[in-house]
Image 1 (cartoon, one colour):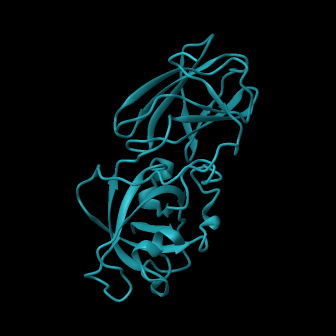
Image 2: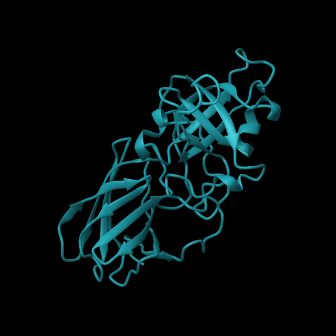
Length: 259
């Protein structure tokens, strides 16, 4: 394999990676105020298949330290993949907060608004509230189970991932969806373009979550990607998908984001 390594990974075939979201580098040095609840059960299995489109979070390497973000934080999927360090605000709630500890999570889902309930009584994810509906394993790092909802402080931090950026191709004929996963640095994507063997660069649009859409005939062409993170770094990942790619395949690059 050359410098543009192509690694074909069958869906759900790669092993669950160990903890990937630990961080010591803040992207936002300010501690912001929010609230947090939890969902998904003690093993976090109920947090799979969220609104970012990552599917099985174990197989994608994200694990169970994840959270669904309220509308104001989710930003229509623009923050999918971002990492946040969260600590319970012990000064505001010493009864249900664990002091002196924090946890770093990945944004993998949307916590939708509940318009039937007021913002301060059950409608925790209603705009304009910043709220994290965390996996139970993540939440119990910082809060006591019976607390239910706690005040928290959070900041966006650098994501650390093992290996390179990955692309999963789905769709049919003239419609392709490219799911981008395992993104380090800022963790999320600002823009993305694809280039086939016989095309120039084609600007993609966000379809939903971390899925980017193309309406061009690309079957039978090797594919390259130009990807810009929300941190402003652009990677040119050439010929990561060979001409024989098929819908449902996942390809791993040897390139990764620093910011």
